[in-house]
Amino acid sequence: MDETKKQDQTSTHKIGIYLWIWGLLFVLSFCSYMVDWYQFQGLLRWSLILIFMFLKAGLIMAFFMHLFWERYAIVNVLLWPMTAIACFVGLMVAEGKYTLFSRFFYFFVGGQ
Amino acid sequence: MSDPKIEGYEFKPGYKGMARDTASDQTMFKGVHWGKAMMWIFLLSDTFIFSCFLISYMKGRGSTTVEWPNPSEVFALNVGGVPVPLLLIAIMTFVLITSSGTMALAVKYGYERNRKMCGWLILATALGGLTFVGMQAFEWSKLIHEGVRPWTNPFGAPQFGSFFFMITGFHGTHVSIGVIFLSIYAYKTLAGHYDTGKRGWFTSMKGNYVEIEILGLYWHFVDLVWVFIFAFFYLW
Image (cartoon, rainbow over all chains, first blue to last red; front, side, top):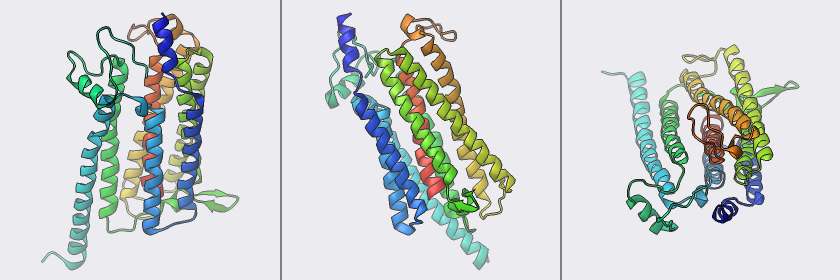
């Protein structure tokens, strides 16, 4: 019984950390909304969107989903498959460019 | 975090622990509740589904020769005659983050075996999810009235509608399922099923507060997916 009691104490985190992450998520969401509000364009817009997105996703996964405190086996099982998704994104960027090129070519130049 | 001790097995942190975990006999993730491990595996597969949707959206948008509709105009709301870009989407984002925060606190209070706080916070999370789905229904009906269909729309590239309804619809389904489960678990928590270890009607297994953490993982994942949809579909 003593054992479980001790473990109960170590298994929870202070409420402050959740409130901090919560606040940060609000601030980051507000920032990403401001990207649209001020109509940033081009590279600045895309990089800001990606930075705020990854920061938010990282905070949610690390603290709300407890991955930061989780054992490495689970963390690695979850995060390594994401490299496959990254590869897929790369492949489809190339494929999309090729499709766009073919469409322009055959729509406007013609197929003869 | 919730992992109970197993006799004869000592958990080690870091890569040493990872090597022991992956090389251990009978089961991996020793001491982790099976439901939690399976929820993570499910969320991983769900990640792949949502990634496929978003990647096909990226490819479709990147390869069309027609101008893509400008999301900050399409999703603008008129407030007193002035169009405010993405107003509804911003409110939906804040509602979902709020519900994610209440869920995180519910998990924390669950582990402290604080039945009342845990139950009410889950209920608050469910209400947040319900609000989100309601606003999404409003957004859908608004766009349908404006003539957006999966095969056409008045704003630009015809693929816009199919990607919009597919991606936000699939996410909204996740939120709706989450709201149903949140309501069930709010009842179970407030009724004290996890304090008495009452058996569930479906699995007939003894209840435990670890189920709240598993439910929390699902709910945070729904919020996580929205972060990506918000960035790629609404802001890009």
